[in-house]
Image (cartoon, rainbow, N blue to C red; front, side):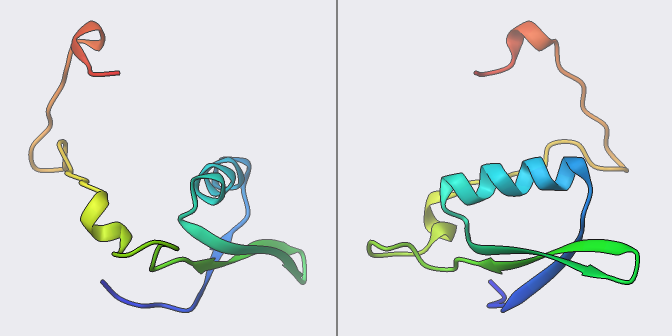
Length: 81
């Protein structure tokens, strides 16, 4: 996992809502909103380690199911909740 410092992301309503969720879940350590000229953006500090032992990488199991070369469609009633 790349240990990046601050990350700059363009400010939109969608990114703002996603950042709020990630911050609440503890994946983001700090969030600042900046304005440069007429553009707004967020500066995020990612949290690489938990307060407890271990990193997030061991506890987060992400798998990309659908990608551009292989589309996978599911019936909504059969998706896990």
